[in-house]
Length: 481
Image (cartoon, rainbow, N blue to C red; front, side, top):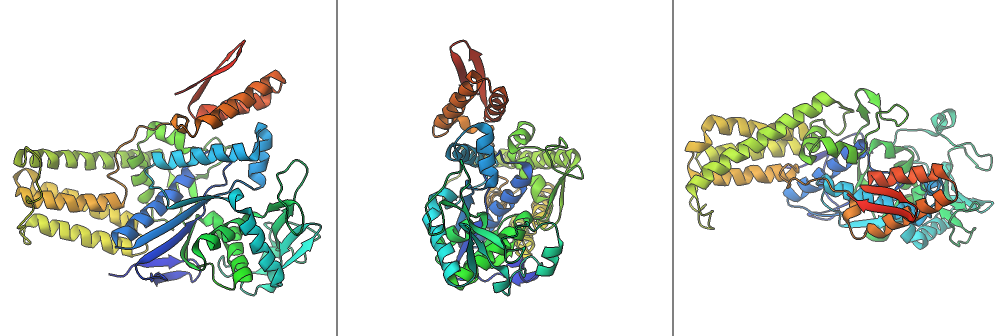
């Protein structure tokens, strides 16, 4: 049964045919690592986790990359605010990001790449763009000339006239066109800088992902991933840069989960409805959150509500209760545990075998239709309801055991049979401890300098990482909770 996905580029569902038979390459845009992961991010990365799981369920080999942007205006501003180097700030929040991904049961990517580790590759990409006539240099900055690339705006559905009229275009009189964007930025005082043919400076945000993807994939890859927020300008600019530098498409398919609201309102710190993953996991288990996020199709705007979360908690408990009933029935049949031969000679016409067949068919039909996770979840719960009707207690043990194995395979593809984990902040990770110590030392220094605003900000950052501070006459003591 073929898989169909909605391609943002064509604005329609297309049959998924990978560039290499039975092998899929995915590049997912990760975080700009200057703060903790929030629940809007969680929705995005839980969806991509299920995409990777389902492709594996379908028999594909999957090689997926995610990046961490540690060189950008937001990173540098946060580092300055905290009085830290960009490197320490980036490493701290990168570590926190992957701790949160683990806590959500998101499987690790094949490769995590950090932007500042690939500056030479980015300079090479910019050199190619300039040499091919798509870029120009002004005062040490390098800009991409959008009018030279006729396909600009095709991915996001924008056109240059609308961009000029809109407020999203940065006004800079040095640009040949208002929509031209930075490929290389000459360093400002106090910023980190790398030598280049144009100036000591740093790469623009968009060229970072293009360069790393080309470096690792060596050409066009299968799926470009990220949230709808990445669609313009980030992914649009990546498409233009890759063509300008290498003469190839960036990717074959583009997928973008939609916007996220909290109780009907856009999430914002100023509105007091900003929720980090760490905060959410204090009240809700990872599977409850996962069930809740997957209950809305990824291309539909999602509204995060307490009512919905309560319903997901009940749904998860129903699954767990069902598992307990089946486990009890199987324990009575196989008190010593099941052996390798216990499933031999299964009855293909058993009601339990047919039930498992229907589950797999319904689940596959749902997921093959543009990763329709709400229907996939419904198939799982239909199975539970019908299984109760059949009566697990009186079922033939071998058929029940095999049906339950198939149920668990589907649940695992949705991430709903991961081991429950007590949320533990990354401060418990040995690799995280040196970063914590740097932040504690910087806070101590800020206090001694009378910079109590910075000291308070650092206390807040550490508190969210699970680090308790105690100020003493001899300095600050810390304890990892």
